[in-house]
Image (cartoon, rainbow, N blue to C red):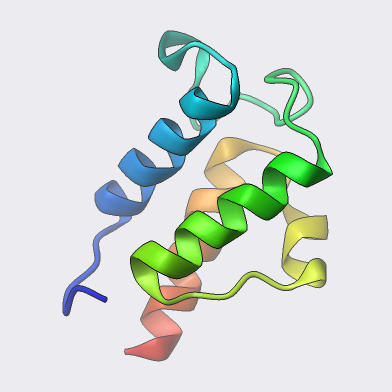
Length: 85
């Protein structure tokens, strides 16, 4: 895990991962809902795996339940990264 992970790095990783799962990159924004992007629970599992590999942060089932928008995911992950520091 990088020593100083920024919110921008997490955002870039999440945006790229989402784009690989189907939505066009230009359709992805912090305000976009996962439902609008057609991201389902299996996609969230894949995103969680990428995040764990990239940043060493685990997302729990409770975490995933809190995520409604792309921004929610970014903020939650950044909070988890800060907690590990």
